[in-house]
Amino acid sequence: MSGDEPVPLQPTAGADEPELDRALRPRTLAEFVGQDRVREQLTILLEAARRRHEVVEHCLLCGPPGLGKTTLAAIIAAELEVQVRVSSGPAIEHPGALASILTNLGPGDVIFIDEIHRLQRTVEESLYPAMEDFTFDYVTGKGSGADAIRIPLQRFTVVGATTRLGMLTAPLRDRFGVTFRLELYSPPELAAIIRRSARLLEVAVEPSAVELLARRARGTPRVANRLLRRMRDFAEVRARGRVTEAVAEEALRLLEVDTLGLDATDRRLLRVICEHFGGGPVGLGTVAVSLGETEETVEDVHEPYLIQAGLLARTPRGRVVTATAYRHLGLRPPATLPALEPDRLPLDP
Ligand SMILES: Nc1ncnc2c1ncn2[C@@H]1O[C@H](COP(=O)(O)OP(=O)(O)O)[C@@H](O)[C@H]1O
Ligand SMILES: [Mg+2]
Image (cartoon, rainbow, N blue to C red):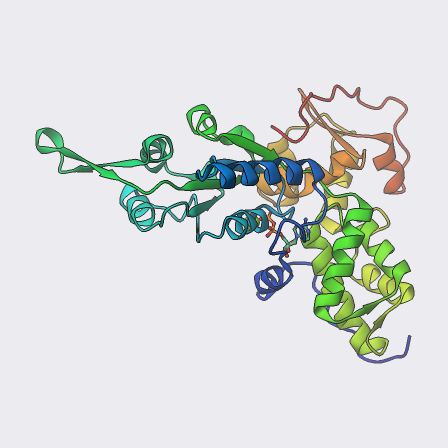
């Protein structure tokens, strides 16, 4: 390394990240890497609907952030050659707003509702008949003067996305014909995504650097793409544009991404439980407060990967770290580690 100025590298999402996401988003199911079971089910679902000339059933996509939910929603619409209207739970503020979206859909169109677990109750209730009978019951006036108008809608498909299936009400869940659970990606799948992104970004990445990145991207395509982009910056400034394994190592070190792909917050999370709570069990709320993060961030962003990596477990009495976590942090595991009683559905609180 020469002694030139340090490169500003930010591990957090910058303002231009959504744009990057869009640029690297696969447009067809064939381009979508991994999630084989989901892809297969979806292929059949789309093909069957096409053959019967019917609209596709309402689909629910769930899984941690950055695994391809928004991408899949756009792919569903593209494969069906229909329009997609993108919205989100918090953005639909009242039933009238939902009515205006639904009455403007064309036949067979897709409405994508991101963070669908955050829909207002009144909006959610007006979505039920719309999903079931393709009608919108619009209430005008108040009290005894109230009147309900029934507006017929075109047949359409709701694609809902959520990071937390457990927070969806039962009636809403019941109205989806299919639920797709996205899983964290394996290193070979991430490697394929990184090679594709490198091609699109026109950056030369050596195969060994691709593999290194794939192992450090915490099972998440968005993280893989973000790391790749940081590597590109780094390589342009320090290595004539070529991402070699040494460049990748150095950039990951600057980004504080460790050998298991953990970032600084992941490590802080483990350290807090080891050092302040004797390894656990400790409640989610306490962990979140100690880190200065929201419970949602801890649960959706950090825990799934820590659990998969065998560093953390959710037990009925709280979060517990494993001996592997102690060793990873360079700490000695206590003689009596808290007993692990993992609940059955680690990703479904
Ligand atoms: N299976 C995949 N193959 C290739 N790229 C993917 C895949 N899944 C996600 N990505 C990329 O990762 C980024 C985040 O995906 P996105 O759909 O926005 O995730 P989510 O909506 O689940 O948070 C996008 O740039 C997308 O292109
Ligand atoms: Mg999304």
